[in-house]
Length: 231
Image 1 (tube, rainbow, N blue to C red):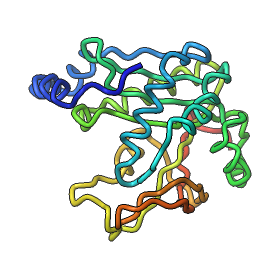
Image 2 (image 1 turned 45 degrees about the vertical axis):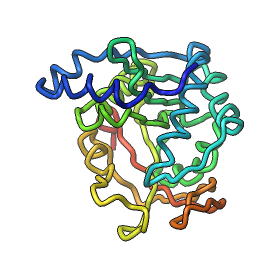
Image 3 (image 1 turned 135 degrees about the horizontal axis):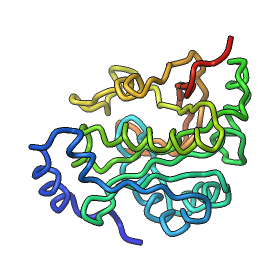
Image 4 (image 1 turned 180 degrees about the vertical axis):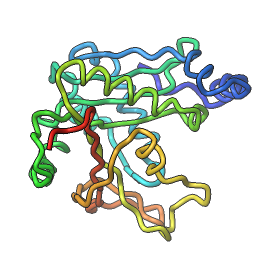
């Protein structure tokens, strides 16, 4: 697998599509869903993208391919895992991953106990993991469209809702870009509800001085029921 194509190629393609409406833009993009072992051929590229793009605020993640291989093995080994892949003219421009909330995936196991405080059946929910869109294609509704495709797939397989975790950073964090947009807007457009559940997760975190150290990072849980739940 290769690293993402240079932004120069994508920028020209995305710019040419800027004249199109969001609906027309989405129709130009090919989105495919992969399940279980079908994901194998893409794990290296997903790992490379996680390392590249999760260095950005708010994750500030200093990743390694050694860790990524172990982390992403949890997707491949789970028959109910799904990955949405977006392509523009055969060039991959985005990934969204998901798997059942009841699984051996490390990050899921760590907050399952907190989830149960919501008094919902944990077996009914899936977990949206990565939402990674190439920078030149952000802001056109692609992340929302890919997430909805994932949700539809999970709902067809019997899941009743989805959830995901978002990193919480101070508004005055020194590495926060001036033009940074909170993910809350996407969450709300996708009809997710922000809970009071915050879990701590440790990863190699880039510091304001450019150094890196392992530290706990707070992540807040967002949740969505695919259909109105019975009272």
